[in-house]
Image (cartoon, rainbow, N blue to C red; front, side, top):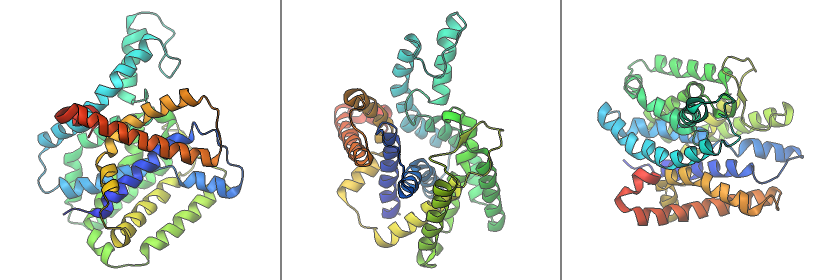
Length: 343
């Protein structure tokens, strides 16, 4: 069964990821309350990506799951383009000792080259957003446990497990600069698992409870206003693993939004559109290539522009430039394109 809503949601999620990353080179600093609320709500496509991945994992893999086949497919489609695109950049960063995260003052081949290479590779910190790949590969590594979780007969226990993990994640927060794959795993795994649970109850929720998605959107908006306007939180919450910094309510907000958006898409925006289908099918290629496009734009534009409108114009320009780049690469690479760019 093909879900048009989830396909359209994938296109929205990757657009929001690009939008969130373009913000950092937009030189826009919100001052008014509505601007702060807007900035707080718009980024967060990674939550949607994790939720969609869990939904599709349950839909496509649970009934015919074979671990070796599943991991082999993920290695070809996700790990392979990650390695192909990141290793040259990592080598460059290590050779020129780019003043980033893993420059070591100690001398010697190991400390100057081998150790930072491994650190960059395992954290994905070399390009914007690449930290997601080490995290999601950890999730796929425990996929047999996730299959058993999905098949649990006691649905109340299933909800209790994912609810408990969500509460833990709220206090763990995202890692500082997304440098800790294990912390990202603890934080985003329950979002992935919630997508699986939602898949199990999808038909019931889609055909009933008509007011549910609107209620969830209102509640998520209230949470956004509370955190951005009242608490003064500007973006995603990051901290060290075991440091206490209160509860990260953005996790709850984004899970509510994910459920609401998917239900609304399936009810009211379930038609197929060629452009949306193209964006959804190219979503991983856009994910892998957009940091490179952003880096080029950053150096070409040289901070000569700024503002709210500039952020959005920049987002659309980067997004469709990346889509065009991905399409051209796919035509050139042919059958090898999925292993190189993820599409």
